[in-house]
Image 1: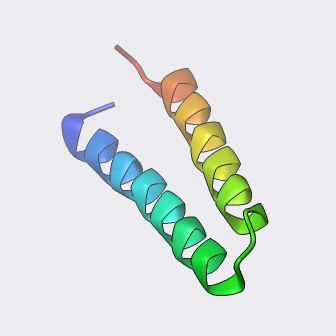
Image 2 (image 1 turned 30 degrees about the vertical axis):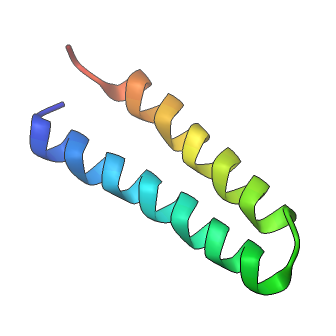
Length: 53
């Protein structure tokens, strides 16, 4: 994967974590944060699986 693709995927994972954190703060529940972290980590695993290095 080129560095631009890696950058966009990394930014997407960070955005998912940030959104999950904001939703968790607004709802006063840890569930959205946990879901955001899990989804971002699944994205990280998929990113490594398709990496052609």
